[in-house]
Image (cartoon, rainbow, N blue to C red; front, side, top):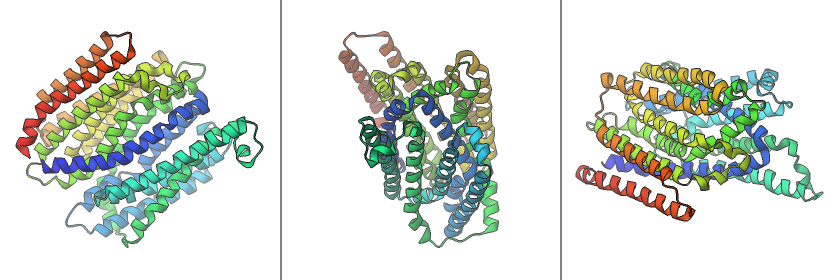
Length: 487
């Protein structure tokens, strides 16, 4: 249980950087939806979805490969680090060169008039790829505080630049000021300002990470690279399929949705997708701490019990987030501009889908620590195929609601497939009775909040708060005995 406490502690620190950082970025959503409007916000969603997918391709699973090999006692840590770094640097440089040569192709893909949007995209992506291994190094070295500092540094710079362009310069321009700052702003360049801010913040994080790499004197080993790639290629396929699950809907909506303004529909979907951010943040901070934690405890004689306990606590906290968002959705909706709120009905579906995705990630440890990542490909590709097919079928019929249902169906099938495969290759005895009880309790509380409507909103919030406290209290009483017993 001490290992669980250690994981919880690191999760809190990673959570501070990701939760606080993404929450601060989340505060930009009202500004972006207000200033960009549905069309440009749709464009921004499309660009960022493309970056997310290509980020997986350009890191080609080496982040997880680095974790696996760097944690082995019989491997040279510096060689693993250096080989991973130099490989990423080489392929990223090739990507930049080829993309610059094919800039007109990218311009047509994004359907933008100015090629500079393409350059913003290329270099944001390149810096994010180059930052991947240095950030992974901080995680494997168990240095979450420095990880947090650099992450927050980049996030604060991004936020400040957004506020500079979209608030200060915009307000001065609208007020009729003729000074330098007012002249910076042009309402036709709102998309540029957001991307410039992102580019600068990614570049600053890259510079901040350089000393961490330079002082190590990493070396390169071609034979080690082959082994790394052999291990990481399935991770690439898994990650790519996962990113397709997360982002292909945002690529397909403008192409398949039956609406005269498809990019605006993507903007509405993307904005409401942001309301599931608390679940995404929780899963992300759990992932940062859990992946190296799982690998380091793989040889622990109680590893399987440890993994089962982690799953149990993960589901409890995930359900709390679901209830918290849905119980206070009437407050959270003000984080997006009013013209985007017509899509609020998809939020509970997306929250449940993301929670299931988190469970799938926790389950995935069985094929990673047994080096049977080929089975991970089966799980991930199955999910991606379902996502793509359902989006193609549903988008023309029911609009972006179809994308929400596609995510829910995809992650649910992935969960079942992964669990069935794990029973054969690495059986972990999860406590399904407890898990089912928590799920049913959360479902009942959610239904009660929907059925019992109180005219005075403050009373409704008090009732919802008491239900959340009740859920936490019951979970605490159930888990307290086993937690104390195993400590």
